[in-house]
Length: 365
Image 1 (spheres, rainbow, N blue to C red):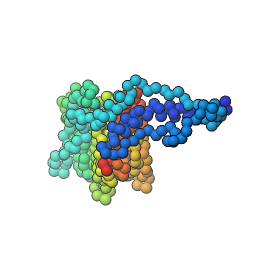
Image 2: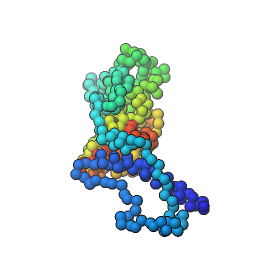
Image 3: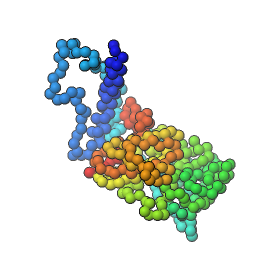
Image 4: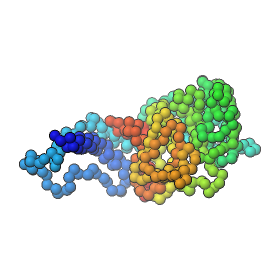
């Protein structure tokens, strides 16, 4: 057989097999996520309606180039469709506690004061799975959102209620050296029962984080992390959006998570048609995650808190490396329920359906 024909058949066979294997999941997902009263979708037929089937004689006389042999379908695992449909129907499944709750600072003269406890607790990543032994700030994973304005004087009073030492690093902030939160480099470790006070002026503005910098692979991997948002002092530099959504990924304790939850317990973004939604992507894990939004693009306007200006770009898939923060704005101009997931597919979907780093953008038309 000619090499070109052989390559054509191999590629075609792969694509057809993939379509057959994934069709059940696609159909189940669309059916489960379509709002009541909306048009129902089905998979496209393999040939145009009304087109005659090829006769055996025609098939026998056709050349391999004109009519490649159809590959034998690879069967999906037993129970695939039922499991895939069941997990989608559970979404969004509520759990008892969620992180990313705003923490209002106390005011002490010119200082904005945040009181933060480091502690261990049980955490539900999925309502139908056993809880995991997490650590975090103020009893949640992620910890509370600390939000200030550029130029504010920040005092973070951190009390260690863990059975191990720790430290807090304000990732992305220009702080005095003793406030950088790296034990044995800029400060002694915070021992169990002790309190350490961090004081600094909030700058630069943008999307930033705070997390452990001591035994960090383990401690951050188990939940010692949170968002630190610094709004620009110049109001003209602030985002003109209808919603502000924080999206923190992690890939250690409990597998692949978004804001401490795995699908179907992830919290969807819900917006009305025409609204502009800001999504602050933050990667606190050890792997790169390319976030892919179905149905509409994202306008990426800042990286690590720094505005991109004329370098802003539009995409539907955004790779976020460990430690990075990207700000993306979605104009919700396409109604429906849209998948929003990591496109390293083993982080989001398996033989028994979707899991882990899967969420949705729901645009109410």
